[in-house]
Image (cartoon, rainbow, N blue to C red; front, side, top):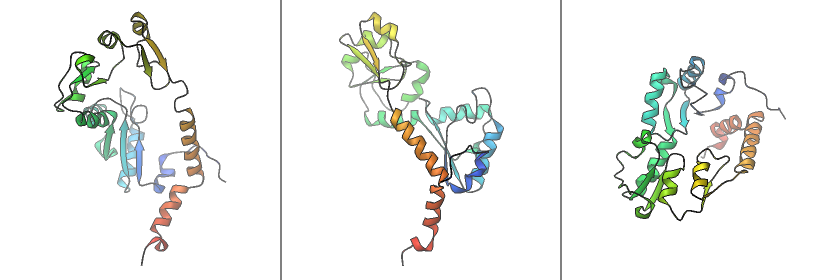
Length: 214
């Protein structure tokens, strides 16, 4: 078995894949400027028949993030599609319109709710559901006087204002072993697929006359 090894560049494996899912922050830019070498590699992948899909955990719609990338100098021909967490969230929110929704979070993310025809509630008591797109702090605790526990479904407390929770007598907890096994399994699976060239083998098998019907 061929052991996993660092890749010298994307071109070393680009020919084995049709689609490339690429993160944004720290991969093609650093928040201040784009990285030309990375962008050029993605452009070549597209030009050679591939499809680069940018993915981002930004809570904003893709249109907003694309405008940011344009300002950083990321060329449009370096990607063919763009999906953000904001896009996925908007799709879910649209299913729950008209609400009403108690929306908690900074005003800079108001674009997340634009055009969804959601009615806004003033507090939890008047809401059909709660949408939180910012840290859980005093506003949430004050609006939910019967709240006893707030759970961060993940590692850490970066989305919970623990000091505010303490002031309101609310217990803040997290899930310290969230996704530990899953991440490890996925990483090992990717290593094995790369070392044994599984994707390339599947691609060759599907293009073989043996895989076609009469």
